[in-house]
Amino acid sequence: MEESGLKERVIHAAEAVLDHEGSVSALHVLMQMGWLHYVHFQDWQRQLPFYDCLERSMQSTPERRARALEFFEEWARARGLECVTAQYWPKARHPGAELQITLNNDPALEALYRKVYLKPGLAARKADKIKAQASKPPDLLVFVTFQEQECSECGEKMDKGDLTFVEGRNPLCLRCADLDHLVFLPSGDATLTRRAKKHSQLWAVVLQFNRRRRVQERQGLLVTAEGLAKAEAECLSDEEQRVARRQREAA
Image 1 (spheres, rainbow, N blue to C red):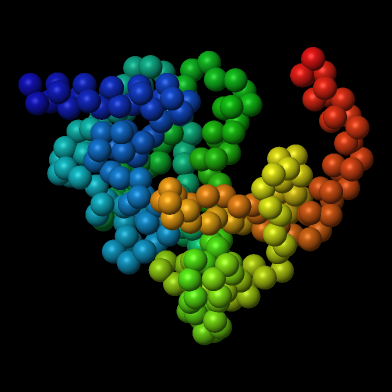
Image 2 (image 1 turned 90 degrees about the horizontal axis):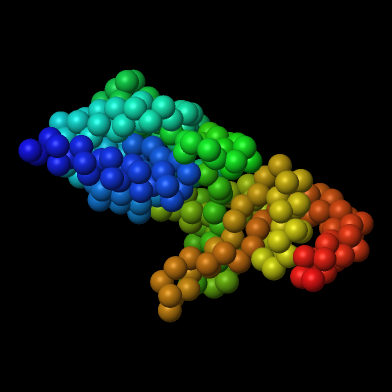
């Protein structure tokens, strides 16, 4: 009875994620079931202390997780779902090796956890986006400081409102993070932002903590000066066409 109940939970979780997201992995299923919290997944990507492997943060016993993985794989095979392999990289200036999921770094289990299954009938553009996201490193994040602090490497004072990059639990000034050559592009112009990001070899998302709402809110991007200049030139050259298109769509 317990086995059938677990199988039902796994299938229900997998189908819910697949329907909503367009893809599903074993880690998604564990999160949907409450066996893994997204905040722990984020801390693992940031490589905080005690997060050397993700399995330390998972609920239930290893045996039940193994059975859940088996049920998930059976369900995916029965559905004939297309599979791609995800790569999990640390949120760091120099990512290095992929992150470890299992306690003993078991190759077979590591491979199972990295399988991502696609929803049948996805538009080609959506499927390509999911495949690309499965292997790309996470976005670099830069934060607007809400209080004075010091750079953990050089000791430079950072005032409230300055930008800082956090590695582990250590705040870094942009110079020590090798991001001081980037320029800030505030949110607001979606086309300019998209093009500046495309033309920048290195970029980072700028976030500011909203104390009232208790969430990090996106403020814009740090992009290269060259990438921003190219994006501005492109936007200037086709501004009339974009205005005309918006007018046609609004009519």
